[in-house]
Length: 436
Ligand code: GDP
Ligand code: GDP
Image (spheres, rainbow, N blue to C red):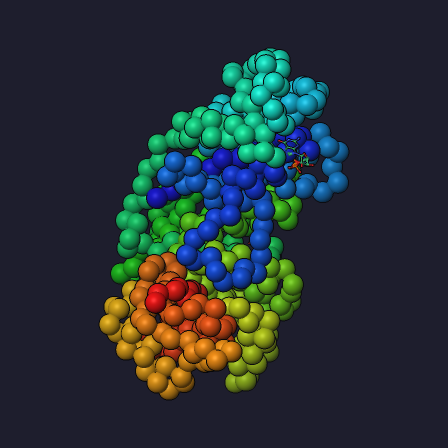
């Protein structure tokens, strides 16, 4: 199901990131006990009254060293481009400034629903001071205090009211959604084009999530795929499109809708720090991952090259040890045919369910082979295990005391589960829960 997107706009120091963090909260879920590689605070998921939505803090998108007003203008444009509803925040302690009016003018022209929030209204006496904000022209201003968490419920009630009715993605279950991420110039657009022009591929455009985004549907060997639009593919000539934070935002949005993410590496330039950061986003999001080493045609290869390159990748991307690696050339199309089958395997594993009895047989065999550890005289006891989620697969192992389940033993069990069920291309999550 596609989710609505909300963007927060306003000048610096009005409290955008404070409110973003409040709304995102500590999203405690069973899939979050693995330490993440990255935490990017410009884009996240939030929830209100059982409605999930995406939230963007446009203030976190710095746009070079442009003058302040120009930056704000571009942040507002990003909000208008990316969001279904915009929260416009002003500072209740300072009144309306010229910069607020400037942003208001831009937002006004957008035809998007704009909800005006007056922040830093920390006590009820201040509430009657908010009337001057009607003059911005966005109707009733909502007094809030990000710092104290006041008024946010009323604000969100109003925000949710303006969510568009979102059509369900068609064929959701049988179609594999994937996206390509990677540094500029790794060959994302070239690879998409190569895939679309491959033999026996049937291509059709379908409407994407934002008004001008197009997802591309392709059919190959009996399987439907949808390629989700990424930064590299939407060259519309806007100033902010080349900024790093904006490409991160686009990548995060594409990852969010994907079953499988292709992490592209440029064989010619080799692995860079930025590649790891980008791959970290896909890993954190719990998506299926295939590493694609593109531009394979630029290397002088012999029968050892691939093996050596793989070792290099494994050393750099230890957190992606489950991701298969495909070597290919988007330009010459060499080995291109190996890609989609791998995407399919990753996707199937990402959605795979293991019956409880089979899972427990494997766990008990593993324990018989390598008995549970004893910590300070107390032995870890494993009672039983069960799979609690897919996409990615998550397993809960019930034990006498979760404190006794050390990382290394968890890792051992994870490896046994992987050996038994072959979860190539997907992260899996393992949680220890107390059950006496
Ligand atoms: P941003 O630049 O718009 O993202 O603003 P920040 O979220 O970084 O907040 C700027 C400053 O305002 C910080 O010092 C916050 O602690 C403070 N602040 C944020 N919300 C409130 C609020 O509701 N009341 C008060 N008094 N201060 C706030
Ligand atoms: P993007 O920014 O990631 O979308 O990268 P592009 O697809 O625009 O490609 C960047 C440059 O790399 C272009 O000049 C492409 O022609 C080139 N390129 C892409 N794939 C390959 C490849 O497999 N081999 C070689 N030699 N060049 C490639």
